[in-house]
Length: 351
Image 1 (cartoon, rainbow, N blue to C red):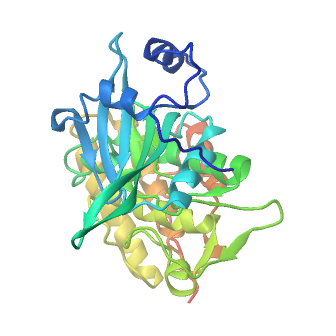
Image 2: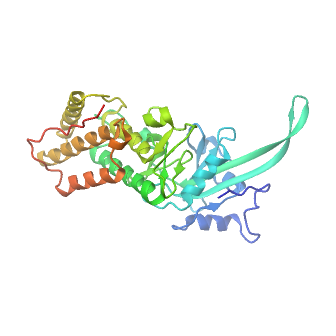
Image 3: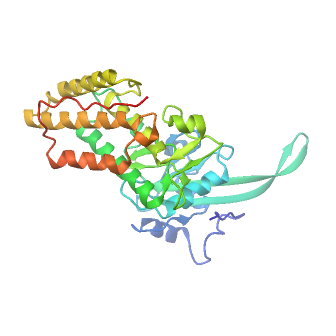
């Protein structure tokens, strides 16, 4: 499915449609993402003013777009030299049909091109000037990386726990309902809404699997070092378990404030889990009653064990997002209360 381009800003619009009608369409809660002219996006971002910047990354700058009624959307202006059209088309076409509370909602996009005479080495040549922009629901709490810190401060435990569950839910939907592998899951690509509900974002690197496929092998590598699965880095193997590995790193980071974790043998894992549970128990006892402390300590125990299991070097030994959701749901069904004589959950890796 291709994305239209145009030489003129208003070429996407019927003659009878003005910018006010576009604003009305964007405000509809069940709106299908619409193609927007760059002039409209310049207007709501004050010509992409620095004052409207929400953030910037390796592929573009995100601006706050303000509609006439005060509603805001996030406008991501992609760098022309960094983003290939296939990446842009991937993100648009994948997200148009995606609707889930833990996946960021695409509301519009812009794909305009024009040719301009540019002087190069003393002579003029015709150069294509491309404008590629993506528009999303506005999430005022920014991305998860802005909230990560050591476990002694920052997000409260129940928020971290809900974020882990929400990311699992979003991944399960992408993997099973959409057959999409994200391939660049990291805290910067997890956005948080007003209620700190996590939403997966940035699908430029994603891959769509056919009905009969469970994995593919690619020659090209994309993603972010530190979050990429080892089989993807070494052999180009892509599967849903690639995202699960990234999720394991994020869980460790959410619970410890860093990406450091033991890499082999049962004893270091047991010691690592015991330390994490002990650290969090010390934090929780300052603000919670005894029963709530026990519930949350069991959640800490289970989450760090799941995070380490996600980091198994053998992708077949990693849980699925659904497995993780089931485990967390079972934990809640017993109110998080387990036999106090139970030791910390230990994850054993096979060499």
